[in-house]
Amino acid sequence: MRLIFLYVQHKSGVFYANRIKEEGYYHLLQLLVRYKIVDEVLIVIETPGPTRSIMYPHSGVSGLLINDLQSLALRDDDAIWCRGGFRSWHDTLKAWGKKGHWLIAYAANTGRERWLFWDVIFNDLIEESVLDGRGRFNLAWIKPISPVQFFLKEDVKTSYDLCIGSSYIHDKKAQWKVIDALTVYLSKYKTSLKCVMPGVFRHGVKTNRIPYKIQSYGLDIDFPGMISRTALNELYNSSKMYIHLGGGGQNDRGPLEALVCGCVVMIESPKRHAPFLRKAPSTVRIAKDGASPEAIADDIHDMLTCWATPFRRSANNFFNYYCDPIAKILPDMEKLFNVIKANRPPAPFTLVEEFREKQS
Image (cartoon, rainbow, N blue to C red; front, side):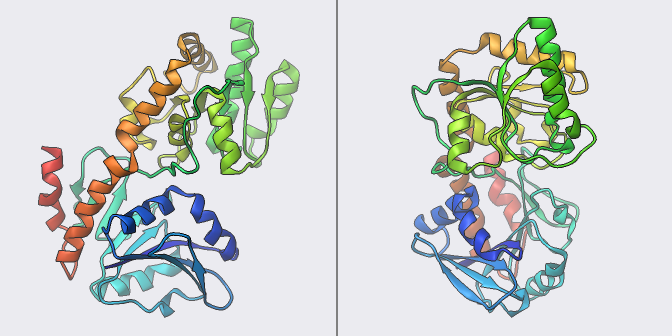
């Protein structure tokens, strides 16, 4: 069986064809082939220009740049996994489903899980798998993080108290909440924490005031900009704590990456993150009141006061217990694709019994 991974639609197709090698998705895809869960994987990127093949270093994993998804030649046993989804893909995907291909979605905060034709939805915000009212199987999924890109480095000196986010800096990511809390922290605890805020600025009413507040209060924050995954791995490893107070998104990868690198983590909206993050309060703190700079400052102080070097190993162990790709993700992938191979046309209800054993 071949798995088609629909990655992205973008004018910079070559960039994304190379960028995917740094993603947890790519690591999982090559594991699916290595462990013979699927026979081969084709990564598809829709982009202007002529159709061309992309070579990847792992046997059985190939790529294709294509300017029209409808022209993709499918085999009878192909299954399709769509990351996100673009409106122009809707009718093509629906037609493929009518031809008997299994359609799998990971919505990636696009809202595309609402499309009715999916057979399987990778849902990393639920704890137990369920067949929904539309007959789509919601698999309690674990988002993969690449161990090639993100890993714990032993005996690293911690240079930063806080790593504040790891993506674009804008109002929805809520880095501004941390800045407000740091001004309170400085006043209450008489300490200016050493911080780093990777990413590039985007406009926002709250975000636009960040530079002014930093200068006014003399906060100690480094801004390395949008950095490579390798550099980000170094930042995580040199930070005691990672903080993400954004209230939206879908299981933002930052807290997961930071955990595997040994950071203790603070988040605000647990329903927007993987359920297992609620299970170790000493490693992952849920902000008591994300609307209160005073409460956030106290949460930060509590975690940093308790912090010691062994916490780095504890954070890494916590991540591996729930997210190790071979021990935790692959067994569900093997179970899923065995059912897919045995059921054509798609029959999502057959997955219910298969996954019930895991939950019992």
